[in-house]
Length: 368
Image (tube, rainbow, N blue to C red):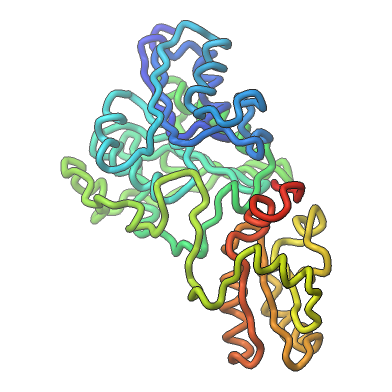
C-alpha cells in the first residue's frame, strides 16, 4: 500500500478503458493520477464510459472523470491534462509519471505514447477493445518489446476501426480497463507476473481468454533500438494519416463530384426519383436498428459477392447513392462499385453518413 501511495500513473484517454482503469487505481490508493484527454462527454458514449453521466454531457472528460474519482477517493492527487497529446508536449507530460496507461483509441496516439515512454524508460500498459473483443499487453517492461517492435509502420487508415466507428459491447472495455489497472498495480508493487512479451486476448462472446507470446524486441526498432534518441516523428497525425484524437477521422478518398450532402439526399427522397437507389452498406444489425425509408442493405464486407445481383436490380440509367454511418465505408463501397461497373452506372456517396443526417436533416433519427 505504501508503494501505491507514493506512485504516479498517467492515463491517456478518459473513455471506455480510462474510466474503469482510473476508478480502480483511485480506489487502490495510487497517490498521483494524471489524466489526458481533449474531448467532452457525449451521450452516445455513456454505455461504455461509465464514470461520466447525462448531467455531464458537454463537460470536459477530464473534469468529469476527476469529479467522479474524487467522490470515490478524495486522497489521491488528480492532475488534469485537458489537451491533445502531441509531439510538442508528450515528453513533458509523460515524464512526470512512473507508469503510463494507453487507454486511447487511435494509432497516432499509440505510436506517440509508445515513443515517448521508450525515450523516458517508462512501462506502458496498453489495452484495446472493439465489438466483443479486447486485448492487453505491457510494452517496454524489463527488456520487453515496445509497440513499434510489433508494428513498425502504421496500418492504412482504411483498415483501422475504433469503438466509435466499429462499435463495442460496453462491458468489454470495462473488463480490459480493469485488467490494465491490475497490471499497473503489479508493476508498482512488484507482485505477480506482468503481462510483458505476451498478449492477453479476451473474447466476450465466447467468455474465453487466450494468451499468445509476442516476438522479442526488433534489433533495428526505430524507437527502442536506441532509446536515448528523442522520437524522430514530429507529426504523428500526418504519419498515421489521422489526427491524434479519439474522434473518428473522416476518410477523403473520393473526389467532390462523387459526393453529395445530406440536404441533397433529402431532396432526392422527397422527389421520390425512380432512377435512384439508396444503398446502405452498414452491418445488418445496424441497419435493423435504424435506416432511411426505401434503402437497400448490403453490408460492405458482402458487397463483392452481391455485385451481380445488385446490377440486375438496377434500371439502365439508375444512379446508386451509397450511405453508411459516418461517410467512411460508403466511400470504399463507391470505389468498389466504380471499379466493378466501369462507370457505366453512376455511383456517389453521402458525406457524413447517417450521423450527418441526424445533425442536419432529422434530429429525431437515432444516433448510436
